[in-house]
Length: 105
Image 1 (spheres, rainbow, N blue to C red):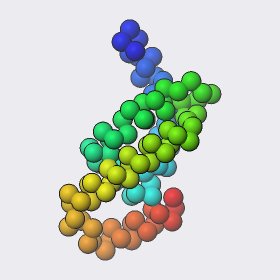
Image 2: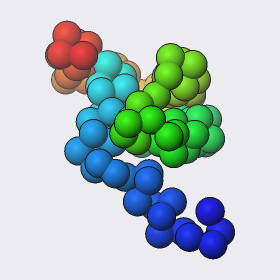
Image 3: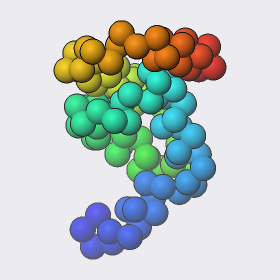
Image 4: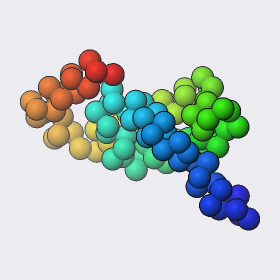
């Protein structure tokens, strides 16, 4: 990784559509809150790195254990963000948006 950092970056984002789709699909039921949470990013960083650098057919050929580790970090990060900003939760547009995101997810 230290000798070829560009290869690492390419492995992380190749293919870019699948990588972005994977991350968005995991965060959609949470209304993309984990994408804004530093806590969630710290909780899933190692698991996501392992999942993206895996040697499957594509960068997104992950196993169930990686997805479970990611989901736990994403949900805990979302809970921590809501805990630090409870005033946002009482807005009606947020309830509707979250209902739509859960239904779509």
